[in-house]
Length: 294
Image (cartoon, rainbow, N blue to C red; front, side):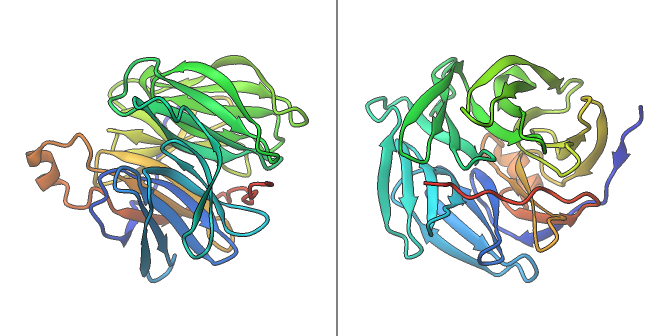
């Protein structure tokens, strides 16, 4: 099956984020949030003009997500935190706080409002990370162990399948997901990225159940149908494509983060847009964002 090549995206906000990551559409304010993880920076970008507000945080931050009771919840380097609208942080629960090797990375909210996020080693030490679930009451449960680079998470439209990436495996895996308990089982391969297509990083699932996967260093975002076949590719002018979010008023705006980490001086010079936020329109809408229920 031959895949489609979709139109190249426009630059929404030009920046040199070392590790631009975690795009999240916040419908409450009509803006997309994203981070530069090691530089502890949170961006808030207007989806039309690209005007961007910048906030510096106290810790390396993998992702910031809306919270049902107001403000935000964040996966910071040593734990789960709340983040108020005026920038104040408060620890909800530590995660490997006594382990200087690891930090929290990417995360997502499941359909019932639980916050999932995983750790990785600062130097991507093999097997140093794990995947955790934060329940609304504040309990943290380790769900998957022996992870190297914990990355994208997403759920099928019916909420019974969870997709998950440990980047070094080159796979997007899938689990059976119990919506009531939040338990996962039957881990298996959904798709493996081969033939020089990069490694899977962040992902999102659209309303038709297709999985959009950012590829690092793959110069693009892949859309896989629920049967695992490659349907379409969004090409980008930079190699390190880190994540994608489907948002906007009709959930058809694709926001794509990128990075220049691991680029040589020559590669960085040849990719001056690495670290920028990109935008394009897609045919199929995403799913409405669920806030953290805690």
